[in-house]
Length: 516
Image (cartoon, rainbow, N blue to C red; front, side, top):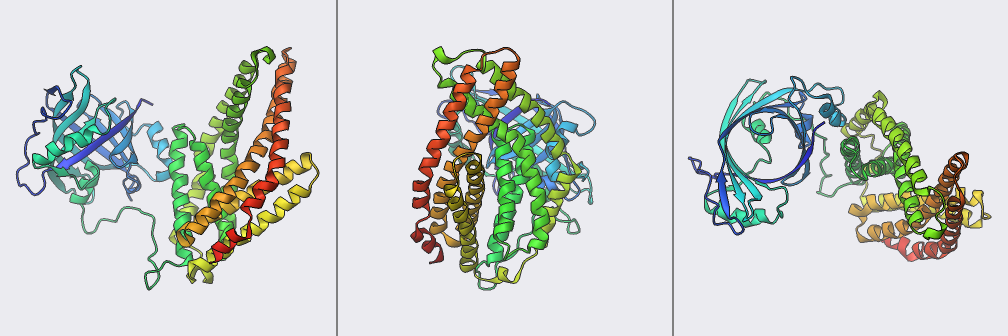
């Protein structure tokens, strides 16, 4: 696969003018020393999508383009309004497998076929600074769009783009915009050429793009408990699908974010079992647990590797005996390669794709119980407090357990319960407002402390495994033993801190605020 390019641009159109104006003179823009006109180019692009336009519904475009300086396959992914990541691959007759794999969580088993052909005659001016650096690229495109199916309709228009240079401050776009407006241009209503082409070549008999179905609020305009819960479930399901793409691209922290979305979904099914029928959601929850476990292999490596590197950096040079850093790097690299290969296989598996289809089906026809029609405050507050009582029992059990492996296990179970309460409170925020937000923050403090304790437990297990490898290779294990001892001391400190953290987080007034 070729490079990924971050594209920051704004699109403009000629407003209500019948005749599109030429590319305006931008030589008077602050910071622009020279405007360099380029040779006109003809760009010929064919856009691909599924029959029900799943990529378009997600703001994703996939095209095969000839002409210009960047001919090839381009996969454009939305990052923020006006910002997209463009992943490029060389020209080939068919959709490159690497690009098709990146959008598999969207397309599943649906085929990618030609949807629209867009031909643009492009006039380009480079806005250069005093050193000859490119501040931005201003272009005017005379566009012809042909629908390749569904009646073959054609549309014509002229649009203008201002694309930021690689090292230019994004604020430069604001500097240029008044000059464009003065020339009669206005921000485009369409976010991309494809979206405008689809809108202007639409037919009445054509099926609408595939989208997540949203339920209307209940009579009176006030959302029900079921609508609150479904909105949260829908957001987390979308986060899983979006996270899939980031994981495949190996984006930093993407595995963690996808795993969190998976866990939040599963937690919501269990927390709001009075709203969504658990006979339907429990089997989905079991599959989500499987997926979270697979994602955890790589995530646990990331956390442990970072923690162990930090601990080694704290050791004085006089106590750093043997090739400790090299040994830990080899351990982390071996786990990463194996974990990543396995994870990509999971994301390509039939089991995973079936899970995504099942989530879509759930949202299209949710298994709502009678309580879903109730007002959200009472129903959702009760669900959060049920999870809280479960957490309280686990914390009390852990504090009463003698120090050692048994307490480590009990504290880990309490950590999982704290995470569930936090997720429940976060899901409740649209319905319960600030009390839920504050409650989630307090539960996070408990979860974070218990998480540090569990990370210490895992670090000790990793250090022991690495020490066994080092010993077998004839290396000194002194420093690894020192690190193990420090982790034991940290765990003990976390255990001493827990009673006070729990006392503050579990004050009765916090729970009363949820009921108010």
